[in-house]
Length: 117
Image (cartoon, rainbow, N blue to C red; front, side):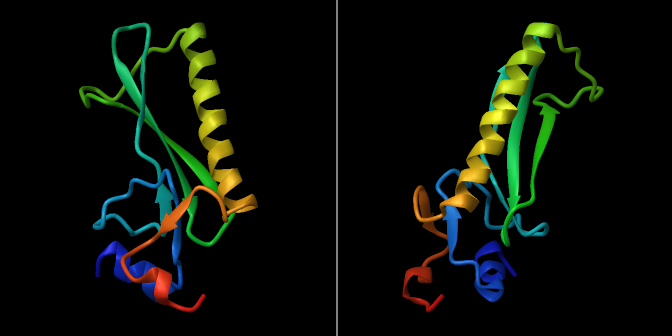
């Protein structure tokens, strides 16, 4: 079962406009953003993605190195401030989707606009 089928079965008809989740990624029943990439002090880059439940409210962040060498990265005070700002903005996006999901949305799958909800 693909993501669209899982969403249809669960009655989830809309996605936030920022949801970039591929069709084969639906195991956690979350809307997941595309990555925001941050270059950090030790010349590594990390990506930050926000995920929010299909059913409301619960949001979380994924933060990981873009190159999977040893999984560790160093982050300085300035980078931490930037990372905090990015995380706050992404979480605010998810909160906005749930507080007013009539704006900045798209249909979750082909045909969702014709289904009763």
